[in-house]
Image 1 (tube, rainbow, N blue to C red):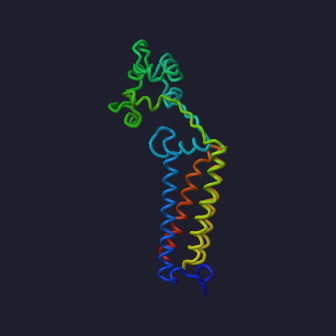
Image 2 (tube, rainbow, N blue to C red; image 1 turned 180 degrees about the horizontal axis):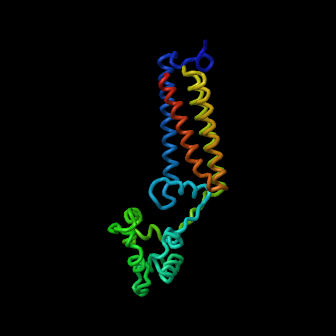
Image 3 (cartoon, rainbow, N blue to C red; image 1 turned 30 degrees about the vertical axis):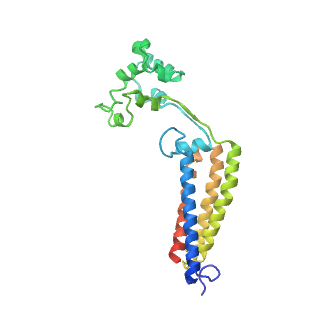
Length: 250
């Protein structure tokens, strides 16, 4: 009974050929990891927060408008009663203006300065020393401008231009598919059970197909962006398993 690709077993080849295949797999793995690291570096921080987030990915592929969290908080039912209508209007006017940082603690505004309003109406919960509000003070402190500015600005994240997305697909699709083909052929030549080999290759290309199509679906529908993460991780995981299987067989 034959095993592997056309009856060829990687482990039955000469030492020099097995060493060559081992080095090939390690080179491919290194290149794939470098590419994944580049993708993370390229897309992270677009929301002005450290690390790669779903907001970064959604903004890059679809674009996103993120309202200042202070502005959205003023309209939430669970924040009613903490600021007076006049204070709320003063804060909204400040957040909608073009001099947010300059007007934050402007002494000419007196008690209507945003810093004064936040101090008397919000710090009972939104302070690291607050005794009310549970852990909200530690999670969202508003004691100082360095804290407040993280929540005072609305942000527009523009997607990559359509021609760049086309070019990215043009370059990545063939390269990723070709790498998957090489790894799949090697994996098919291992001695693992036939179902494991065939389904391993099938899932690898399925995740790659879904990953590439998710870029374009997200372009038109922002809610699909988690699929970029899921399918990308799925493709990377399957490539890792196939490479590991090849190395074990070698």
